[in-house]
Amino acid sequence: MQRIATIPAIIEQHVEDAAFLWHRRAREIDGHLMGPFDIGRIDQRLDANLDGLFAAGQAAWDLVTTRFADYQEPPELFLLGALAFEWQSAPGIKFALDSAGPLGNSGLSALSGAVARSSPDRLKPFVARWLDSTVAMERALGVGALYHHGVNPGLRLAELLTDRDAEVRRRALKLAGARRRRDVIVEVAACMEARGAEERLQAAVAACLLGEARLAQPVLDKMLVGYPEFAGAIVEIRLLTTPSIAARSWWQQLVSTSAMREAAVAASGLLGDMAIMPWLIEKMQSPELAYAAGLALRDLIEIDFNDTDVFVADPAKLGPEFGPIEATPLPSASRAQAWWDNGKGPARFDKFQSMRRLKLDAMRKALANAELTLMNWRRSRPIPAWM
Image (cartoon, rainbow, N blue to C red; front, side):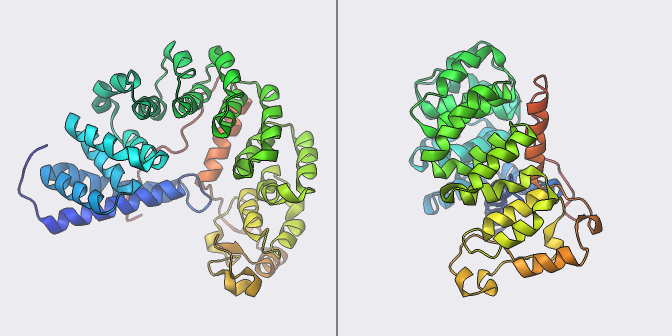
């Protein structure tokens, strides 16, 4: 990095804006609220702020490290990684890696985000070293680099799938599924018997992408009972990999059990059946199920609900029993009913593809054709900020 004349206030603004924009992008990248144009605008602004920091050299590094000392959070760590990778600074990269350790998986995710935004040419000198490192986090970061930049590791993948570290294996499983590596199905199947639930789930998803849904589904069904924190992801992949009639039957059994009802309601939009609208509106009246019903509504109907009044940001507006709910926005049952009854259904609105919709479409296409590489729905689509 170089020392050049800079205006501190401008560099500070670049630091603050870049951290905020990356955090917002990371929060919304797989969600219902933003589409590719929205993410593209964020990317345009994020890249502009990063370019300002890259150009500022040592002054930018000093400000970012000072900010990280005050706020040891993923957005600040992302900036450390982005600067160090851009400048190919070995001391800077070491500092970023050392700083990530205390943050655990969130730190690794932040550095992976920086890797994803860096060019392969700038990363190339480091990735091979990371993959051969004795430090598990560095190996995991190396696998993340392969995944983000669409690199097929060849015979090395089988070795990564048997790594002694669970996070390295989990990331290798994600890579195996995305690159459609059926030659490592034995290693993938072995990971479905791993001790860690997150690894077993990723192995099951990888198996589905490799054409072995029948092998994965019993594992997914068993996990539903003991791991409610993964229920949403499990139900989603289970429905995506089950023929429509059988999927409906499986879902009906799930929604009839109190323990799984919330996850089943949230996934009901994946069934693609508009006939569930009255039932879905009824679920919106329940404080326990309203948020899940809202997620299902956004999956079911491809419009931008920000153009309607169906959702509210303040739960208290729905009644005192909704007040304690932290998850927002929530759908209003009465507004949804009026919107539906008055003929303001999807035909009256432009089609809207959220980032979640892009993810689901990418998964459906990959599951339907074993020859297709899983599309990177998260890829940057730069859109001028003034559009």
